Structures are given as structure tokens and as C-alpha cells.
Image (cartoon, rainbow, N blue to C red; front, top):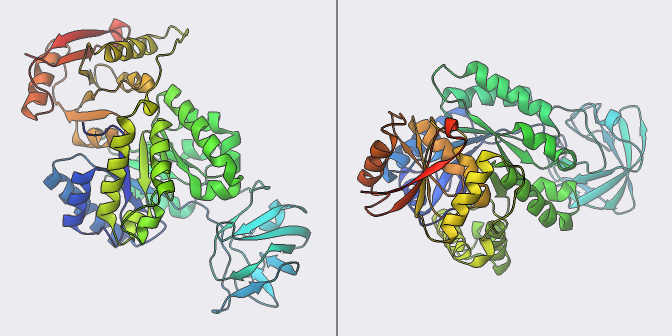
Length: 467
């Protein structure tokens, strides 16, 4: 493997061609993100076809990630020229109408007046404008302008001091989920999560509508609300993966807290054996420029040092001028960071005595001693095998799966190289698996592999040399 940390790319007008997608995949793209906040179902169908075609040409298992919009609260319709909010002035937000009238600014969430209280902050347009609630009269929220400016229609709003009684799973999200299931999307991202309830609801819906015999789409939750930080352990216990969505999160909590929370959440995900993604503005200047800033390079490298599973490009690959260059740059930063000692995970002592943890520690030790060159596992015989990544052994983890869909689902995982093996029986597994990997030129003779056995072996493994 030329890199272990995976790259997620948001697909949009800048990258919506088979040739560019194929080049991006060859350059290091592992997952294609479809943003359901934008475009039509016809557009998404077209993108899915292009991505699948490019994946076959590139001979690479690239997953589809469908990102649900969630209950984004926005301003309503304002005059075309916008509305200027002057520092120190009083402004009324209203839930009584959807259009600007009588100097009152409408909002899309019709129960907002019930959820706010005096003293709460209201942030608009990624926190550029700040209001403070003075009083609430009926459906009118009277505020004081702390940081003003010109606002226009449909700007997003954040409420860092408030708990809103709105579900993270909307009617639109349900329709988008059914579309994603119908078109074989491997991962579904749930936005603005505040607790485990909506995650379990989404999982039930996926299970209900996924045809028998097909692996259900996995769920990745986006951590972008202050409530999600408070309830992170509960959320982590029920989700399949985590995305640290630093855009809204950096408005919901103090921006200077985000790097600390990022490190804490990544470490918890690693210990739990669940994938984690760092997202938002990683190479933002490459939307406009062919080279990133030094700060952006450091941001990507530090995410690798934090032990993230994947990093994500948003506007850089969706609407930017240099989508392919952005992928190449991100891949080169990852490789340089992984070649350093700063992304190494120290061998730790875990007194839990869990067989999986013991195997993970033993494999890590063998890696440090350069006794093995890779790990071979089976999703059928040892469904827990992804957990050996807890200690981050810096060798490939080859996991045999039963279908291309399952292989694509694993493409978000740090260090994992999935491959399809239809027949997975313990007696013949090593022979068939190593033959398949040699045919695909993923391993060669004399390589030493730790082979993870079935659960009946207590999480143990054997050492084999490829013949």
C-alpha cells in the first residue's frame, strides 16, 4: 500500500467526468461523497454511474458515501440586496412568516421561538454575524446585533447556547436514504446528530429496505453540534463510524476547542475500533489556487498524526479549479506524514484481557520487530478482524470479503486492503486467499503473514510464509 490513510472526495461539477474521476482514484481517492444538500436525483444517478464506471477502469474499490442534509436551519426569503444589520441595533427574528416583512427576518424552523431564551447567541453565515436574544414575544425573537453585516436569503444559522427540539432525521433525509439504498450506496452520513436516537432510527430504516443477501449500508455520524460533543460516548456506541465535521462544529463550540476535541474523538474511535474521518477546509485554498497554504498542509498532516482513518475534500474536489491536484497533494502529504515517527502508535498495555485486544497487541509487536509483512483475515471467519487496527500496525491488513460491495465498505478503513473471495472455509482459506492476493499482485512469495483465525480460536492467529 502506498498510503494507509484514506481520502474521501466530494463529487460535483469540477469532478463529474469519468476521466477525471478515474485519475482521482489512481491518485489516491478511496471514497466518493455525494452531497444530498445539492443537485437532483437525476444528477446523483448520473454521478453514481460515472463513479462506478471509473472505479472499474481504475480497478479500485471506491465506496459511495451519501451525505444527508439534516435539519439545517436557515433564514427565509430576504430582499435581493440583502438586509444590513448594524452593531448595537435591535433585530427581530420571526417564525410567523417565511418572507421578510415589517422589518422582521424570517427563519425556517417554525418552533425556534420555543427553544431559545434570553441571553442565547444566534450565529449566522458560519458565525460571521452574531445576535443575542433579548426577549421573546409570541413568535417574535427580539435580538441585539453584536457583530453585524449584510445578510441574504437562506444563510445558515447556529445556536451554540441552545438545545433545539428538532430531529436530525428529516422527511427529506428519509427520501434520500431510500434513494441511496436503491442505488447501492455503501455509507450514509447523518448530519447534525445530537444523540443516539436518530442513528438507531436510520439503521432500522436501512435494514428494513435493504434486500436480503445484501450488506446494509453503514452509518457514519457527523459531529457538528455542541450536544454531540457532550453525548459523544453514547453516539459512538451505536454508530458504525464518525465524521468530525469541523465547519459547523467550529461555530457550535469555540473554534480554539476544535483541535482538542478532534484529538479526543479520534482517540476514542481508535480505541473502539471504529473508523473516523476528519473533514472541512482541509485544503480549502486549493478551490482557487494550485497550491495549498502551509497551514493547510500542517492540518492534513496533523490529522494523520492524530490517527484518523480518512481525511476529506469538499469544495476542493466538488467545485474547485484543481480537483486532481488537490487529491495528489493530499496523498503526498499523507505519505510524508506516515513515513515519519509522529503517526506511530506506541504499544500500550491493556488489562482488559479481551482476545481481540491481545491479538492486536501481538500483531503490533511483531510489526515493530519486523517479523511479519502483513495481516490476512476473513470477514466471514473472523468478523471482528478489523479491530486489530486498534494498535495501528503499519503493515497492510488484507481482509477477504464475500462481495465487491463489502470490499467498498472497507475502503474507508485505515490500512485495510479488502479483496473478494467467494469461498471462505477455514481449512482452505490460507491457500485460496494467498493465491488470490498473488494473482492480484498484492503479495509475493516469501512474504510473512499473520493469519487471523476464527472466533473459536479466541481471537488468535497463525504465522505463515507465502509459498
